[in-house]
Image 1 (tube, rainbow, N blue to C red):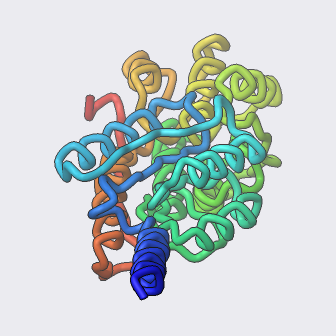
Image 2 (image 1 turned 180 degrees about the vertical axis):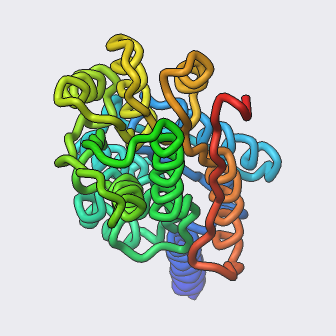
Amino acid sequence: MKKKLLAVVLTFVLIVGVVGCASNTGTSKQGGEEGNYKVYLITMDQMDQHWVTVDQGAKKAAQELGNVDYTWLAPDVKDDAKQIESINNAIAGGAHAILLAANGPTAVTSALKEAEAEGIKIVYVDSPADFPAVQTLATDNEAAGKTAGEEMLKALAAKGITSGKIGIVNVNASTASTVAREKGFRAAFEGKGFEILQTQYGDGDAAKSKDIAANYITEGVVGIFGGNEGSTVGTGNAIKEAGGEVIGVGFDKSDTILQLIKEGHLLATMSQNPDVMGYEGMKTAVKVLEGNTVDKAYVDTGVSVITKDSL
Protein backbone atom coordinates (compact mmCIF):
# COMPACT_ATOMS: atom_id res chain seq x y z
CA MET A 1 0.00 0.00 0.00
CA LYS A 2 2.84 2.37 0.90
CA LYS A 3 4.55 1.62 -2.42
CA LYS A 4 1.35 2.41 -4.33
CA LEU A 5 0.91 5.66 -2.41
CA LEU A 6 4.53 6.65 -3.08
CA ALA A 7 4.06 5.93 -6.79
CA VAL A 8 0.96 8.13 -6.93
CA VAL A 9 2.76 10.99 -5.17
CA LEU A 10 5.76 10.76 -7.51
CA THR A 11 3.48 10.72 -10.55
CA PHE A 12 1.67 13.82 -9.27
CA VAL A 13 4.95 15.66 -8.72
CA LEU A 14 6.14 14.74 -12.21
CA ILE A 15 2.92 16.03 -13.79
CA VAL A 16 3.15 19.33 -11.90
CA GLY A 17 6.75 19.73 -13.02
CA VAL A 18 5.91 19.11 -16.69
CA VAL A 19 2.97 21.53 -16.57
CA GLY A 20 5.16 24.14 -14.93
CA CYS A 21 7.82 23.80 -17.63
CA ALA A 22 5.21 24.02 -20.37
CA SER A 23 3.77 27.13 -18.78
CA ASN A 24 7.19 28.79 -18.63
CA THR A 25 7.87 27.96 -22.27
CA GLY A 26 4.60 29.49 -23.34
CA THR A 27 5.37 32.81 -21.65
CA SER A 28 9.05 33.06 -22.59
CA LYS A 29 8.41 35.95 -24.99
CA GLN A 30 6.67 38.03 -22.35
CA GLY A 31 9.66 38.91 -20.16
CA GLY A 32 8.38 39.92 -16.72
CA GLU A 33 9.03 37.06 -14.29
CA GLU A 34 11.55 35.58 -16.73
CA GLY A 35 13.66 38.75 -16.40
CA ASN A 36 14.19 41.77 -18.61
CA TYR A 37 12.72 42.08 -22.09
CA LYS A 38 15.28 41.40 -24.81
CA VAL A 39 14.96 44.06 -27.49
CA TYR A 40 17.18 44.21 -30.57
CA LEU A 41 17.71 47.14 -32.94
CA ILE A 42 18.60 45.99 -36.46
CA THR A 43 19.51 48.78 -38.88
CA MET A 44 20.59 48.73 -42.52
CA ASP A 45 24.26 49.15 -41.66
CA GLN A 46 26.68 50.69 -39.16
CA MET A 47 28.21 53.21 -41.56
CA ASP A 48 25.90 56.18 -41.17
CA GLN A 49 25.75 58.55 -38.22
CA HIS A 50 21.97 58.36 -38.72
CA TRP A 51 21.91 54.79 -37.37
CA VAL A 52 24.22 55.68 -34.50
CA THR A 53 21.66 58.29 -33.47
CA VAL A 54 18.80 55.77 -33.73
CA ASP A 55 20.83 53.53 -31.42
CA GLN A 56 21.36 56.38 -28.96
CA GLY A 57 17.61 57.04 -28.80
CA ALA A 58 16.79 53.37 -28.25
CA LYS A 59 19.50 53.05 -25.61
CA LYS A 60 18.21 56.10 -23.74
CA ALA A 61 14.67 54.69 -23.62
CA ALA A 62 15.95 51.28 -22.48
CA GLN A 63 17.85 52.91 -19.62
CA GLU A 64 14.79 54.91 -18.58
CA LEU A 65 12.54 51.85 -18.67
CA GLY A 66 14.95 49.78 -16.63
CA ASN A 67 13.53 46.40 -17.67
CA VAL A 68 15.23 45.96 -21.04
CA ASP A 69 18.30 44.06 -22.22
CA TYR A 70 19.14 46.04 -25.35
CA THR A 71 21.35 45.03 -28.29
CA TRP A 72 22.15 46.84 -31.53
CA LEU A 73 22.88 44.47 -34.41
CA ALA A 74 23.66 45.62 -37.94
CA PRO A 75 25.63 44.59 -41.02
CA ASP A 76 28.82 46.50 -41.78
CA VAL A 77 27.32 47.49 -45.16
CA LYS A 78 23.85 47.52 -46.71
CA ASP A 79 23.28 43.91 -47.68
CA ASP A 80 20.04 41.91 -47.58
CA ALA A 81 21.72 38.61 -46.71
CA LYS A 82 23.66 40.19 -43.84
CA GLN A 83 20.54 41.87 -42.48
CA ILE A 84 18.68 38.55 -42.60
CA GLU A 85 21.57 37.03 -40.65
CA SER A 86 21.17 39.75 -38.02
CA ILE A 87 17.45 38.98 -37.68
CA ASN A 88 18.19 35.26 -37.35
CA ASN A 89 20.79 36.03 -34.68
CA ALA A 90 18.24 38.09 -32.76
CA ILE A 91 15.76 35.19 -32.91
CA ALA A 92 18.43 32.76 -31.71
CA GLY A 93 19.33 35.20 -28.94
CA GLY A 94 15.83 35.01 -27.50
CA ALA A 95 14.54 38.39 -28.68
CA HIS A 96 11.17 39.52 -27.38
CA ALA A 97 11.02 42.45 -29.81
CA ILE A 98 12.95 43.72 -32.84
CA LEU A 99 13.23 47.36 -33.93
CA LEU A 100 13.95 47.08 -37.64
CA ALA A 101 15.03 49.45 -40.41
CA ALA A 102 14.50 47.19 -43.41
CA ASN A 103 17.08 47.35 -46.18
CA GLY A 104 14.46 46.15 -48.68
CA PRO A 105 10.68 45.67 -48.50
CA THR A 106 10.56 41.94 -49.30
CA ALA A 107 14.03 40.45 -48.79
CA VAL A 108 13.55 39.94 -45.05
CA THR A 109 10.00 38.54 -45.22
CA SER A 110 10.92 34.92 -44.48
CA ALA A 111 13.06 35.93 -41.51
CA LEU A 112 10.26 38.10 -40.14
CA LYS A 113 7.80 35.22 -40.50
CA GLU A 114 10.11 33.12 -38.34
CA ALA A 115 10.30 35.93 -35.81
CA GLU A 116 6.52 36.24 -35.72
CA ALA A 117 6.19 32.47 -35.23
CA GLU A 118 8.41 32.85 -32.16
CA GLY A 119 6.10 35.51 -30.76
CA ILE A 120 8.58 38.34 -31.40
CA LYS A 121 7.08 41.82 -31.78
CA ILE A 122 8.22 43.84 -34.81
CA VAL A 123 8.48 47.64 -34.76
CA TYR A 124 9.77 49.50 -37.82
CA VAL A 125 12.05 52.49 -37.41
CA ASP A 126 12.87 54.63 -40.46
CA SER A 127 12.16 52.06 -43.20
CA PRO A 128 9.43 49.38 -43.11
CA ALA A 129 9.25 46.04 -44.89
CA ASP A 130 6.13 44.64 -46.56
CA PHE A 131 5.22 42.65 -43.47
CA PRO A 132 2.80 43.48 -40.64
CA ALA A 133 4.28 45.21 -37.60
CA VAL A 134 3.10 46.76 -34.36
CA GLN A 135 4.03 50.27 -35.52
CA THR A 136 6.17 52.22 -37.97
CA LEU A 137 8.04 55.30 -36.79
CA ALA A 138 9.51 57.18 -39.73
CA THR A 139 9.85 60.37 -41.70
CA ASP A 140 7.19 61.15 -44.28
CA ASN A 141 9.87 60.52 -46.86
CA GLU A 142 7.90 61.41 -49.96
CA ALA A 143 6.88 64.77 -48.50
CA ALA A 144 10.45 65.42 -47.34
CA GLY A 145 11.80 64.54 -50.79
CA LYS A 146 9.42 67.04 -52.34
CA THR A 147 10.63 69.69 -49.90
CA ALA A 148 14.21 68.94 -50.98
CA GLY A 149 13.20 69.47 -54.60
CA GLU A 150 11.46 72.73 -53.77
CA GLU A 151 14.56 73.98 -51.95
CA MET A 152 16.65 73.23 -55.04
CA LEU A 153 14.14 74.94 -57.33
CA LYS A 154 14.21 78.11 -55.21
CA ALA A 155 18.00 78.19 -55.36
CA LEU A 156 18.01 77.62 -59.12
CA ALA A 157 15.47 80.40 -59.63
CA ALA A 158 17.58 82.76 -57.51
CA LYS A 159 20.45 82.13 -59.95
CA GLY A 160 18.19 82.69 -62.95
CA ILE A 161 18.34 79.01 -63.99
CA THR A 162 15.02 77.80 -65.45
CA SER A 163 16.16 74.65 -67.28
CA GLY A 164 18.91 72.06 -67.22
CA LYS A 165 19.79 68.56 -66.12
CA ILE A 166 19.32 67.25 -62.57
CA GLY A 167 21.08 64.17 -61.22
CA ILE A 168 19.94 61.83 -58.44
CA VAL A 169 22.33 59.75 -56.34
CA ASN A 170 20.35 57.17 -54.39
CA VAL A 171 21.02 54.04 -52.33
CA ASN A 172 19.27 51.34 -54.35
CA ALA A 173 16.01 50.69 -56.16
CA SER A 174 14.31 48.81 -53.32
CA THR A 175 14.74 50.54 -49.95
CA ALA A 176 11.30 51.99 -49.23
CA SER A 177 12.43 55.17 -47.50
CA THR A 178 14.91 56.34 -50.12
CA VAL A 179 12.64 55.34 -53.02
CA ALA A 180 9.90 57.53 -51.49
CA ARG A 181 12.33 60.44 -51.15
CA GLU A 182 13.23 60.21 -54.82
CA LYS A 183 9.56 60.06 -55.77
CA GLY A 184 8.85 63.24 -53.83
CA PHE A 185 11.91 64.98 -55.25
CA ARG A 186 10.89 64.16 -58.81
CA ALA A 187 7.35 65.38 -58.12
CA ALA A 188 8.68 68.83 -57.21
CA PHE A 189 10.16 69.19 -60.72
CA GLU A 190 7.10 68.09 -62.69
CA GLY A 191 6.28 70.70 -65.34
CA LYS A 192 9.22 72.93 -64.32
CA GLY A 193 11.29 72.59 -67.50
CA PHE A 194 14.16 70.58 -66.05
CA GLU A 195 15.40 67.15 -67.20
CA ILE A 196 15.74 64.63 -64.38
CA LEU A 197 18.41 62.15 -65.44
CA GLN A 198 18.26 58.43 -64.74
CA THR A 199 18.97 57.70 -61.09
CA GLN A 200 22.35 56.21 -60.24
CA TYR A 201 22.88 54.01 -57.17
CA GLY A 202 25.86 54.02 -54.83
CA ASP A 203 24.63 51.72 -52.03
CA GLY A 204 24.83 54.61 -49.59
CA ASP A 205 28.62 54.50 -49.84
CA ALA A 206 30.19 57.97 -49.84
CA ALA A 207 33.07 57.06 -52.15
CA LYS A 208 30.83 55.39 -54.75
CA SER A 209 28.38 58.26 -54.51
CA LYS A 210 31.15 60.79 -55.07
CA ASP A 211 32.13 59.05 -58.32
CA ILE A 212 28.51 59.05 -59.50
CA ALA A 213 28.10 62.75 -58.65
CA ALA A 214 31.37 63.57 -60.41
CA ASN A 215 30.06 61.90 -63.57
CA TYR A 216 26.87 63.93 -63.32
CA ILE A 217 28.93 67.11 -63.03
CA THR A 218 30.85 66.10 -66.16
CA GLU A 219 27.48 65.75 -67.94
CA GLY A 220 26.75 69.38 -67.10
CA VAL A 221 24.02 69.06 -64.46
CA VAL A 222 22.83 72.14 -62.60
CA GLY A 223 21.75 70.22 -59.50
CA ILE A 224 22.25 66.91 -57.71
CA PHE A 225 20.06 65.27 -55.05
CA GLY A 226 21.48 62.77 -52.54
CA GLY A 227 18.99 60.26 -51.13
CA ASN A 228 20.69 59.45 -47.81
CA GLU A 229 23.72 60.32 -45.70
CA GLY A 230 26.36 58.54 -47.78
CA SER A 231 24.83 59.76 -51.04
CA THR A 232 24.78 63.32 -49.73
CA VAL A 233 28.36 63.25 -48.47
CA GLY A 234 29.53 61.89 -51.81
CA THR A 235 27.57 64.55 -53.69
CA GLY A 236 28.96 67.37 -51.54
CA ASN A 237 32.53 66.13 -51.88
CA ALA A 238 32.20 65.86 -55.67
CA ILE A 239 30.86 69.42 -55.91
CA LYS A 240 33.65 70.62 -53.61
CA GLU A 241 36.31 68.91 -55.72
CA ALA A 242 34.87 70.20 -59.00
CA GLY A 243 34.70 73.73 -57.64
CA GLY A 244 31.61 74.41 -59.72
CA GLU A 245 28.25 76.04 -59.23
CA VAL A 246 26.20 72.83 -59.07
CA ILE A 247 23.50 72.96 -56.38
CA GLY A 248 23.52 69.97 -54.04
CA VAL A 249 20.64 69.02 -51.77
CA GLY A 250 20.55 65.90 -49.63
CA PHE A 251 19.23 63.93 -46.70
CA ASP A 252 20.30 63.30 -43.10
CA LYS A 253 22.50 65.20 -40.69
CA SER A 254 26.09 64.31 -39.94
CA ASP A 255 29.13 66.37 -39.00
CA THR A 256 30.49 65.98 -42.53
CA ILE A 257 27.24 67.09 -44.16
CA LEU A 258 26.97 70.12 -41.87
CA GLN A 259 30.56 71.09 -42.70
CA LEU A 260 29.85 70.82 -46.43
CA ILE A 261 26.85 73.11 -45.97
CA LYS A 262 28.91 75.62 -43.95
CA GLU A 263 31.52 75.66 -46.72
CA GLY A 264 28.85 76.24 -49.35
CA HIS A 265 29.26 72.96 -51.25
CA LEU A 266 25.79 71.78 -50.32
CA LEU A 267 22.74 74.02 -50.29
CA ALA A 268 20.64 72.09 -47.78
CA THR A 269 19.89 68.77 -46.17
CA MET A 270 16.64 67.28 -44.92
CA SER A 271 17.32 66.53 -41.26
CA GLN A 272 15.35 63.64 -39.81
CA ASN A 273 14.87 62.79 -36.13
CA PRO A 274 16.52 59.36 -35.79
CA ASP A 275 16.81 59.73 -32.02
CA VAL A 276 13.01 59.98 -31.83
CA MET A 277 12.66 56.86 -33.97
CA GLY A 278 14.86 54.85 -31.63
CA TYR A 279 13.48 56.30 -28.41
CA GLU A 280 9.78 56.02 -29.24
CA GLY A 281 10.32 52.69 -31.01
CA MET A 282 11.74 51.21 -27.82
CA LYS A 283 8.85 52.62 -25.77
CA THR A 284 6.37 51.09 -28.22
CA ALA A 285 8.08 47.67 -28.12
CA VAL A 286 7.95 47.46 -24.33
CA LYS A 287 4.40 48.80 -24.26
CA VAL A 288 3.11 45.93 -26.40
CA LEU A 289 5.26 43.37 -24.58
CA GLU A 290 3.53 44.44 -21.39
CA GLY A 291 0.19 43.61 -23.03
CA ASN A 292 -0.87 47.11 -24.02
CA THR A 293 -2.00 48.35 -27.44
CA VAL A 294 -0.75 51.29 -29.51
CA ASP A 295 -2.99 54.03 -30.85
CA LYS A 296 -1.31 54.60 -34.22
CA ALA A 297 0.07 52.20 -36.80
CA TYR A 298 2.25 54.98 -38.26
CA VAL A 299 4.04 57.84 -36.50
CA ASP A 300 5.60 60.69 -38.52
CA THR A 301 8.79 61.58 -36.65
CA GLY A 302 9.26 64.84 -38.55
CA VAL A 303 11.92 66.54 -40.66
CA SER A 304 13.50 69.99 -40.85
CA VAL A 305 15.49 71.83 -43.52
CA ILE A 306 19.07 72.74 -42.61
CA THR A 307 20.81 75.42 -44.65
CA LYS A 308 23.87 77.59 -44.07
CA ASP A 309 21.63 80.32 -42.64
CA SER A 310 20.17 77.96 -40.04
CA LEU A 311 23.54 76.76 -38.73
